[in-house]
Image (tube, one colour):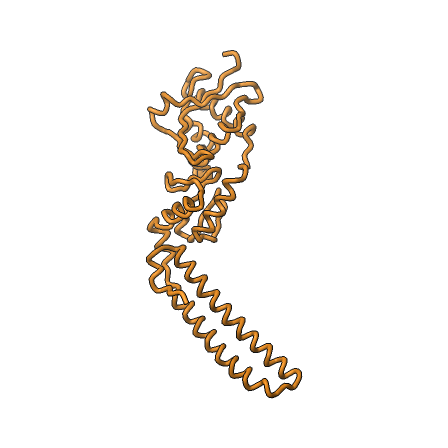
Length: 266
C-alpha cells in the first residue's frame, strides 16, 4: 500500500496520486467481498450448504480488510489544499505540470497565459477559472492536459466584430484628447473606453484584451467595413508605459502598446 503520511509536503499531484492508489486498493477489496458474497448467495439459492460456512468466514475476513482499507484511505488524506492555493504553490506546480506536458504557459499579472486561454487560480473556492469557466477539477496533470487540448484547437474569436469595436473606441479616444485622426493611441486607453461601464474592467481584463489583440493581429484582418486600415505601432508607445503583454501560439511573450486607424489613401 502507498503511504500518504509524507506526500502532503511534496505537492498536490503526489498526494492525489497516493490517494488514488489507496482508493484503488479499497475498490479491489470491496470487489473481493462482493465476489464471495455472490458465492454465498448462490450456495443459498441452490442449497449447497457445504459451501456456506467457508464463504461466510472468507466474507467476514474480507469485510474486515475493507474496513481497514477505508480507515487507511481516510486517515491518509490530510493535504491542506487551501493553504497550497493561497501560498501560490499550486500555481507553481501547475506551471511545472504544463511544462512537463509540453504545454506552453507563463505567469503574468496573477494569471497564467496559455494560448489561446487565460487561467486564473482561485484560492477562495479552490478552483481554476479558464476563460471565465470555473473548474473544480484541479489536479495539476489533469488541468495541464486540458490546456494542451485547448492549445491544439482554434480559438473562438470573431476578428471582424472586434476590429469594429476597436475602431469606435479609437475614435472616442482621438476626440477626447483632441488628437489628429490616424495618430497612434495607447491600447490601454482603448481598453479604458471598452470597459468604461462600472465593473466591466473586472469582466474584461487587460490580459484578456491583450490576448484578443494578438488574435486579431494573427487573423490578418486589418480593415474595417468602412475600409479604414488598422496598424499596431509599438516603438515609441512602448517606451511610454502601458504595455500589454500576452503569449503567442508558440509560447513566446508578445507586447502591444498602440493602435491607429487610417483612411485608405492617407
